[in-house]
Length: 141
Image (cartoon, rainbow, N blue to C red; front, side):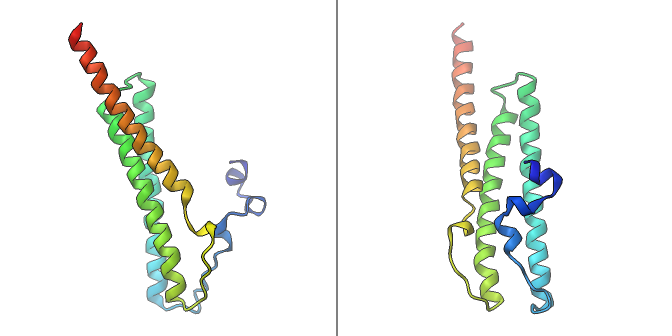
């Protein structure tokens, strides 16, 4: 996190830093498509952060088994899965469109986003079941 805040990517060496698209070799439409996909991925990530912010606010207010928390976690997980799929598809499509060689490596699969997305979906189901149990306990008292 330290390297991300300071912007020192040399020590971090993430995979996307080495992916270079030479815009002089591509047509204008590919440039537009790549920029739209990039902006779309940023927008999806902002939506994930917003949903997590909503759920964090509700959890701070000690509203643990709230529909807002359940729906926010489920939306955040789904958006992270969509983010991973779009990222994976774009990593397969752009080398084909640019007529460059493509070598499949483990760095091309966004496993972190998939795992975190599935975790948030699982967490929403846990909170949903806990809400149901809490409601049943409140009815028996």
